[in-house]
Image (cartoon, rainbow, N blue to C red; front, side):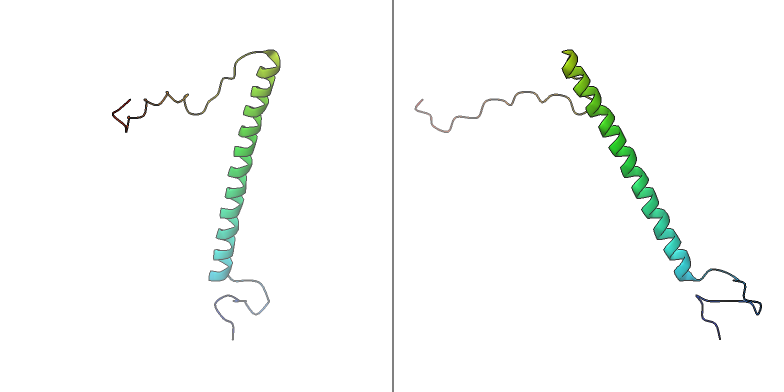
Length: 83
């Protein structure tokens, strides 16, 4: 008697996938997508760093693509009124 994960016809050919096989393949696909996304992010970071290094050697300013430069913080409130 065959269980859900192993169903075969009398000649020995597979009839279909079991639930475990489908889940395993889905997990492998997600892992492959995660790795591809990480590799793309690493390539993007490397290209940006190389561009920055070339700009430094050439004496040009860095053209960053990140967050804008922070504005200076307002002066802290005085806690002592005697000064």
